[in-house]
Each structure stands twice: as structure tokens, then as C-alpha cells.
Picture 1 (cartoon, each protein chain N blue to C red):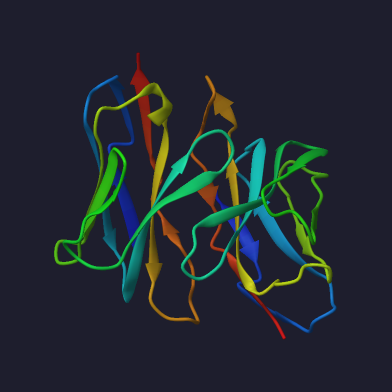
Picture 2: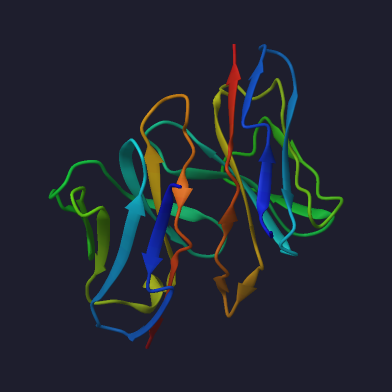
Length: 113
Length: 116
């Protein structure tokens, strides 16, 4: 059965800390992995990863994929209270007839001032 | 088992027809959401409902309508006014919010709608 597992489920840090969020997966016909940040109402798209070893970066956020070990990490450096959110990882299976996103349950990050 | 279900998994319609996508949850969640996903893009919010008999437009509500008559059900109607209805539609639910942060959303398996 395809599955995506995120860890930890929740995390509390202080401003300025660096955090690493993990996402491991077991999916047949892997196509890509997505990271989302969910704040008040809806997840916002962060990164799409399709190739191993190529870091995607946006400001203080970065992410990398390891297709051999079947995982991805999301790093946030110099955290701010505005980074408090749930971070969702989702895997997209390859194949146009499928299209189901397989989501992890998310990591709830709380950044304390 | 508790969960969120969407039906059907695949749906085909002719242009000009309205179509309703089903979303049911037995998680006793207050909040429900509809998203759309297009190839290569992230989720985009269509509508959401935080309580029965109340719902709000999301980022791309034009051409869609919803109802929330029961806590466990949040059907989405794709109307003929939606210019590009072919997409993958995801429904989600959550317990709501705590301290400003949402509880995690549980997503249904999705419905792939193809309009020709």
C-alpha cells in the first residue's frame, strides 16, 4: 500500500532555531514529491521535487529529495514565528490515469518568540 | 474506520453540463475544504466551510458552488460557467483551529474530472 510518513508529528522551537522536517514514502511509480505549508485556511505550495540530490531553495526554506532512500527533508533556518504552521508532504504517483496525491499527516511546527 | 470519502474516483462529462462531486466524512470534523489541482501545480482552494450552513469562497470559487447542510457532507458542483473544469479535485476536513493554527487536514482520495 502506498504511504507517506512525516516526522515528527509536532515540533516546538524558539525563534532563530533551525529545523528539519522529514518525509519518507513508499509509492509505486513515483513521479514527484510536494511540500506545502498550511496556515489559516489552506496549504500553500512550497516545493516540487522530482530529481534526487538537487536542492530547492526559497529564502530560509530548502528541500532535497533522495529517491534511493525514499525520503525528503525540508529545512528551515533562522525560524520566525511566522513559520508556525503545518507542513504537508505529498507524493504524486506517475501515470496520467492515477493522479491521486498521497499526503502525509503533516508536521505541526510551533515557533515561540 | 473513520475517514473521508470522495466519489466517484473518475468522472467524465460533456461540456455545458453541471456535475456534482461528493465528499463525506465520518470524523466529526467541523471544517471541510475543496481544492483543485492541475498538473505541475499545488493545491488551490475553491471553497471551505467551518461550520454547517456556512461556507466561504476560496481563491478560485468562480464557476463552482457548494452546500453544507450536514456536518458530514460538503458536495461541490462544477457548473458550466467554469471555464476549465478538467482537473483533479480534492476534498479535505479538519477539526478546526486551535490558537490560530489549523488542525491537520485529512484529505480524501480525490476525484478526477474530465470534461470534453
